Length: 375
Image (tube, rainbow, N blue to C red):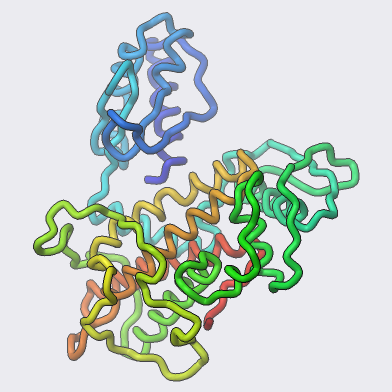
C-alpha cells in the first residue's frame, strides 16, 4: 500500500464514521500521512484525528478511537495504534503477497508508476522565464503537476513564478546541468561543474544513472543465464548472520562502491554473467537492501505528489539517490553465484531490481534526463 492509497483509506474511514453518525465533521478531500515522528510507531502516521477534533466537539483520542474502529481490517493495513494526544499509527501488511503486488504494479506501470489524479482539477499557469535554472525548475514542476492529474503550462499569460537562486552551467552537458539545477533546493547553489563530470560514487548524478544501467545489465545477464524476472519469494533472510536486527538502510560514504573515473564502463562488450562472492569493503550485506527497496518503491508516489504540491523537484532527486544507493547494494544478490542454478528467488530478485530501474527511469524522464542503457 502506498501513502496515497493509505490516505484514501483513511478518508473512506472518516466518511464511513460520518455516515454511521459516529462523527459529525466535514469529510476531508485528502488526509496527510507521513513517516512516524519520535514517539510514534508503525510504518506511517496521521494527525487527522487532531484536525477533526474541533469540528466534532470530541477529544482527539476519542476521534482517533472512532476512526480506528473503521480502519480495522482495511485491505493492506495490518494494525492501527493510537499514540500521544491522538495520532493514528499504521502498520501495513508487508507480507510476501503485498511485496509481490507492489513489484507487479511497478512493472506494469513502468516509468509512469507514481503518476495519479490527486491534483485533478487544479490548474496552474506559469509565466515564461529566461534564466536557465528557473526555466529548468519551472518546466519540471509543470511535468510533476501533470503527472498528478493537474493542468499546468508555461504561457505568456501565466502569473505563477518559481524563485530560485540563479545558476548557469554551460560547461557541462544539458542533462548534467539540469540535474544540478533540480537537485539543489531553490535557495541552494547547484553543484559545480567539476563534481558533475566526475564518474565516481560521490557524484549523485553519475550514481543515479549508473544504478539504472546496472538494472539493465542484470536483465541482460539473466537472459544470458536463461531466465527472466517474476515477482515472488526473494529467498533472503530478514537479518544477516551475526547481525540481528540490522537496519533496513545504511548510509554509504563516498568510495564505498569503489567507483572512480577508471571504473569499468558499459560499452557493449560482453558482460560477466556470474558474480563473485567477494563484496567491496564497507558494503553491508545486500540482503538488507530488499526491505529498503520495497519501502522506497512504496513511498515513490507520495514523493512525486509532494514534490508537485511544493514545487520542489529536489525531493524527487533525493528519492532517486536513495533508490540508486539501494539498487547498487542489492545488485550483488540478484544473479546466481558460481555454478548455482537460477532459482525462483533469483527471478524474484531480478523483478525487484527491474522495478527499481523503472522508477529510476521514470524519475529521470520527469527531469528531462536520459536514462542510458550503457554508461
